[in-house]
Image 1: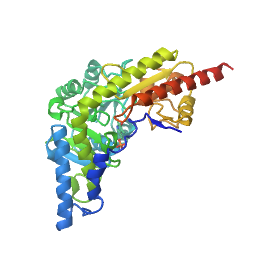
Image 2: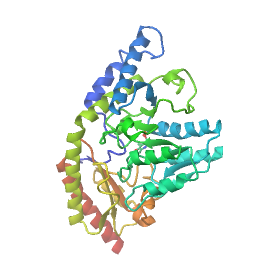
Image 3: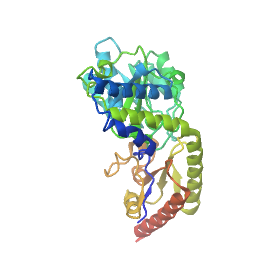
Image 4: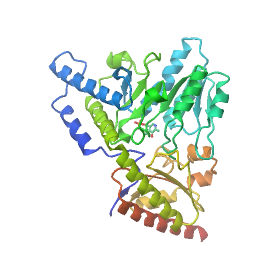
Length: 385
Ligand SMILES: *Cc1c(COP(=O)(O)O)cnc(C)c1O
């Protein structure tokens, strides 16, 4: 059976050029980047270059990039690091975030309640956008930190980070953003948006799994999360993932080079696909703002269905996509993101995330559309019986 991968927001394959760039650092250049000898120095030089490449890609300094094991760790660190730091000072024990954040962010914020934090979860509007006035209102009672994601992983909506960061700063709060889903398609400039911290991950941008980074603006004080050796300027212990760092750098560099062309092509494919399914399948609605949105994301609710049977039926027919997010697929809970948009529990469960990537073709999408059409018709017929 031919298989069609439409789950690029869950993870991407490693670009072949990226895999080639990584290879020498798994075999020949295998040293521990902290060793003083020749092997260690060779590894350290590669990590240093990777750090500079990643910094350049977001207009940061290499001293502001801290490697982590991925986006999850970067989010945990951003939130808990500021929380631990705040405990040592007389800073308001309050974090403000949005209702549509990734679980790694939301659960980290929830964790800080054990440290005495009283947090605020901001609602989003029907289109999945955090309204600046609502943030401003919440900030009137003070906060140590505001964290709002750049692009959402389930509905693809992109927030006005520069504006939100500006509001946070005007109330003396730090600002963090989870940019994991945005790094590929958006041209991110941390000097322009003026964020204090930003999370990234390589495996969402055609790089390897198990590596990411937290950008921490110079002068921002935060506690470390992982204690150990003096790696990452004593801010994150653990032997450096050298091939991962090299792969992450190769991936972010290539993403920038290909960005405009990939975005144009993917947006075109997406719009044609949406048009097709909306005209051919009755009662389909799109979730999330269609303008402030990363090009690769499609999120639909299929009217009349009330569970995730469609997802499993599609898998049997070779189409791989996702219900809500990978983390919530397989569990019976409806997506917290779709509920935040105001969808009912049944509607949220009958929703599908179809995420495109640079290897997606129009033939694949035509085939996927007709398979989705068949499966929806079958399920609706079954429900009538
Ligand atoms: C995938 C993802 C993460 C987690 O990143 P990992 O590297 O898989 O730990 C965090 N936030 C968002 C928005 C994501 O899409």
